[in-house]
Image (cartoon, rainbow, N blue to C red; front, top):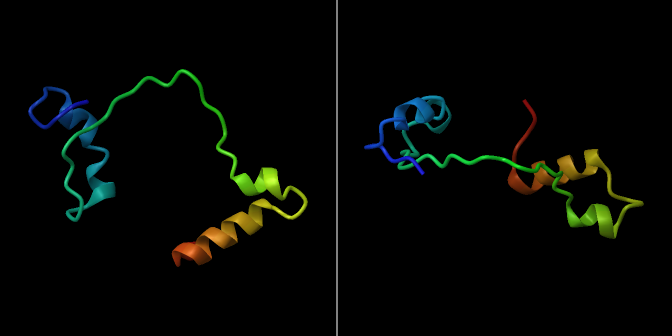
Length: 70
C-alpha cells in the first residue's frame, strides 16, 4: 500500500488522477502481484446455461445500472 507521503506514490497515482477527477480524492494506491487470473462467471451462466447469453448479460447490466453504450 502506498500513501501520499511515500516516495513512489505519485508515480503510481498519476495515471489514476484523470480517471477519478476531483470528486474522488486518492488516499492510497494498492500494489499487488498477480499470480493467477481466472474468469469471473456469473451464477446465471451456471444455473441457466440454456438461456444466458453474453448479450443478455450486458443488456441486463446496462438496464439495471441505467447506462448506455457509447
